[in-house]
Length: 139
Image 1 (cartoon, rainbow, N blue to C red):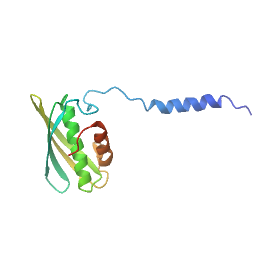
Image 2 (cartoon, rainbow, N blue to C red; image 1 turned 45 degrees about the vertical axis):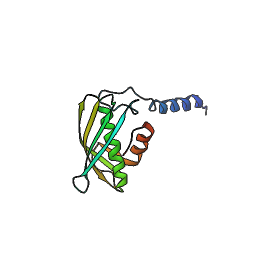
Image 3 (cartoon, rainbow, N blue to C red; image 1 turned 180 degrees about the vertical axis):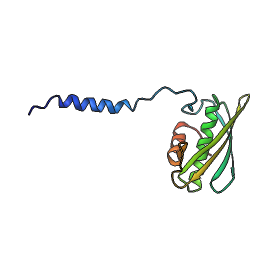
Image 4 (cartoon, one colour; image 1 turned 90 degrees about the vertical axis):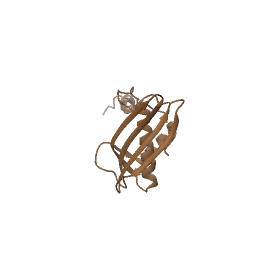
């Protein structure tokens, strides 16, 4: 029995696997990566609406667009979930407002100890680590 090109086959499989690692260009509506260079994060207001439903209002200056304020709200929601002993959050809705250089995001999330149903869920621990890496405050 002849073995044909085992090294080539292995290399081909390895390169096919690496194709999934390529970072695609940001798509319209995606949140930009990393904190804006001159961002000033003005704080988070949190209000528990029900046992698992939480309202966040975040304010910042120097955002590039609404995506930066949305990212700040997501980071705040993830940290809140961890503080409450929950591992996950699910995005319900977010609205943004811009007045001059001041951006505000008004967001609602549910928090839960297990992965909630839906497609807009976040793993709180992973998200907080990502926010820290990107320089976006979580509280």
